[in-house]
Length: 172
Image (cartoon, rainbow, N blue to C red):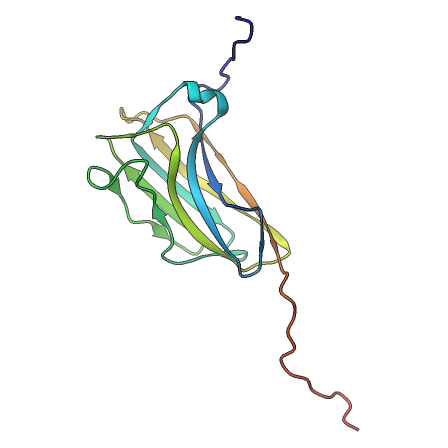
């Protein structure tokens, strides 16, 4: 081993994560979430192209509500269509499915793949955004090694109660 050398324990290891500006949100807040493809620290030595991806974003719909129509792709990574192909984003009450490909001009290294907004509807709890069904491919259609990160938010209720009407309980 060369003195001062760095050993890359996870060569070409990439990470799919959900990123927001904060970690604590109030009831009724809108959370802007980016879905990012990044490299681990040492993996930056192992630049790799990515030509296609598929992933499903999941959340607890009793705590977070997807704001309809806000999910979209960031076309900066794979480029505009054509030659990139972006499928329609499949939306349910607790999941979004993203799938895109560009085998002509693939993306390189990391970048933002997509984004969405969520409204906080649960309070005094924590809630997470996680991923399932992840598949990333290089230009030879070979799987790209990767991991996923679950992002947890603290949801609080800081809205003061409001008196709507007063009724006398003992009208004597």
